[in-house]
Amino acid sequence: MVGWGLGFGDEAIVYVPVGGCGQRLFRTETADRARRLLARRADVRLIWLDPPTSEAP
View (cartoon, rainbow, N blue to C red):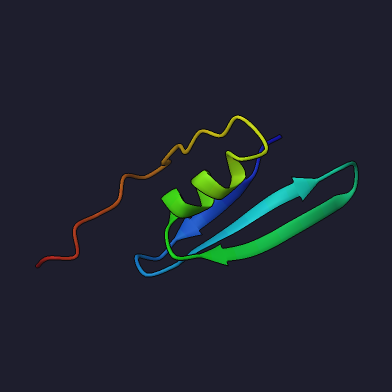
């Protein structure tokens, strides 16, 4: 299973395919929280395509 998500600092939105033709979209506080929730049912790895950037000027 392959899903994807976006981290916004104060929340993460995650898309996960379910079964043959279903899907689930949900929000969590962080991308790591989403990973922990999904890891209860499957082997999950979190891979950053672009590393998080510092918000400091």
